[in-house]
Image 1 (cartoon, rainbow, N blue to C red):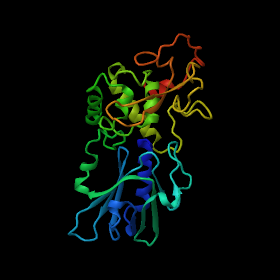
Image 2 (cartoon, rainbow, N blue to C red; image 1 turned 120 degrees about the vertical axis):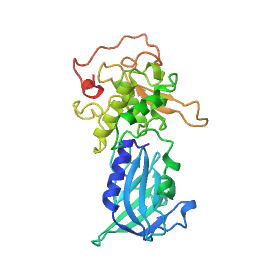
Image 3 (cartoon, rainbow, N blue to C red; image 1 turned 135 degrees about the horizontal axis):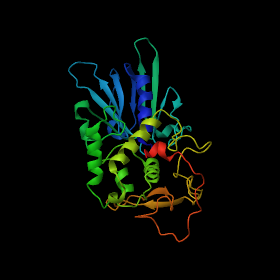
Image 4 (tube, one colour; image 1 turned 180 degrees about the vertical axis):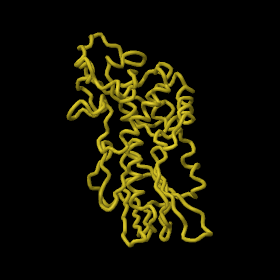
Length: 311
């Protein structure tokens, strides 16, 4: 599932292509909206809310209320703008079959040039009055990429995380009701950088304010990148991440083998466990499997940890 920084970049691309233009073609290929027609509506802006995309539209007539076209990329969704797909570490820019198209929007700008946006495999396609957006996203916690982020949002995110001290920190971070924008990649990377096992209780995760600060810093730094980096970018080729997707390979800090595991949320019956990666040495402690073998020792005396961990 795309992380919050990928969604923010997708929204920016859509906004740059469509904002200020009037829709001349509107094809919504989902059953509940198959008869909806947005031709004549003007795109005001496209903004993210956590992992949700909100396309706000101005009506062609004053008697109509502004609307929001809401979509969610979920696991496989992607928009293509003027034939170009978003490139990112957590999305596939490969060609998609026509049967996966869910939305086709063509828009004309005042100077006459047109933009075409096509959504493939997107989910939760809905249209609501813009004034009623909270019915769709009001349950979300503070958005880590909110341009108005400040102490109030930070304090609320910390309060949300600390409300259930016995809950696994790896589950709490993925819960968008606590704070919005973290996916499986950042969950694994954040836990590694904070030297806590993802299955450890939140109460054992250290200073939650520092954790929230680190999460926001990483998302902000990566929102303009096609390749996500959490290591500081100083580890050479293929040195972008610490643990995510690196099962069986050596830890960049201590050379212990990175392990792959799964964690399930007992609250969500019927859902599949999510994969996670961790270093059994660097993240030893509460929640970590016991290990008898000693670590193989540090690979270097210095690494990029301090840049990201803020220590």
